Image (cartoon, rainbow, N blue to C red; front, side, top):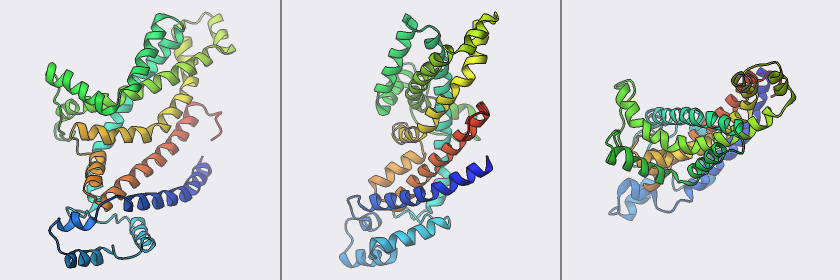
Length: 313
C-alpha cells in the first residue's frame, strides 16, 4: 500500500503542474483590469501603471506564472487585490465551512441513496422500484440554485422551521450551526443521493444474482442478512467509486449553494473573487479544490482495500 500511494503521488505531480498552468492561464484570461479592483474607476493612468509594476503585472505571463508557482510551492498564495488580506488566511477561514457542507451532504446522500438503492434492487420491477427511480431522476434534473430556493420557500418562508441563510461556527453553537447547515446540505445531498441510489441499485442487482447469494439463501438465512451482510459489502465498492468521482461536482455545487444561502465558504469566496477580478483569490480557491479532489481519490483507493482486501490497487 505504501509503494502504491508513493507511485500515485509521483504520477499526480505532472497532473498538478498541468492544472496550475490551466488555472493561471484561465484566471488571466478573465475580462477586466485588476488595477480597477485595486484603485477604482477614477484612478489615473500613472497610478495604474505604478500598481502594475508593484504587483508585477507589467511582466510577461510566463514570468508571472513562474513567480506565482514559486510562491505557491512555499505556501504563499499572495494577497487579495481588493482587501489586501492574505489568501492563505482567507482559505483557512473558509475551508472549514465548505468541508462541513461537503461532509453533511455526503452523509445525507449516503443515508438516502444507499437504502433507497437496496430497496429498489430488492423489489425490482415493482411500483417501489419505479417510484424510487423517478424521484432519483427528478432530483438530478433540478439545478442546485433552484433546489435551494425551493427549500428556502418551504422550510423557511412557509413553515418557518429553519433559517434561510447565515452561518454560526459549530464550536460556538452546535445546534444553531446544524440548523443553518441543514438546508444547504439537503440542496446538494438530494442530488448526490440520486446518483448514489442508482449506482447502489445497479450494483445490488448484479450482486444479488451471483451464486454465493443463492447459496446463502439456500442455507436458510433471512433475506435481511443475505442482502446486508453478504450483498451490500461487495456492492459498496462501485458506490465508493461514484462518491469519489463526484467530489469535484459536489464542490462545484457548493459554489452555487454557498452563494444562495450566504455561507462564508470557499465557493462564495471563489464567486466573489471572480466578480471582483481578484486573481490571487481565484487561483488559491481553485488550487485547493484540485488538491482536495486528488486527496479524495487517494482515500477512495484506500477504502477499496478496506472493503475488499482482494482488490489490487
